Figure 1: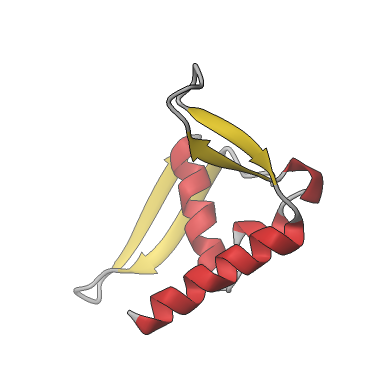
Figure 2: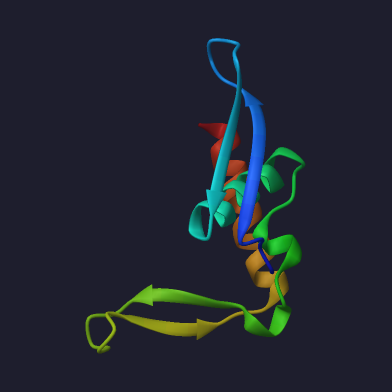
Length: 89
């Protein structure tokens, strides 16, 4: 998913004051990511299906993890389980 290299977000803080948050690079990506959540959009809704994989901890691997390919359906099911767990908390 492409993200902007810069972002400006206007919001209201906890005290009820209007604020503006600006970000570039990683901060812009983070702001964009959080704005997606506000409209109910998740990474899994936008991802290229062939690019999906799980990163599993694995001390035997040089990187400390192994890559396990997955399907879009399997990933959606896993995210749905997480959503349900969050609702139950």
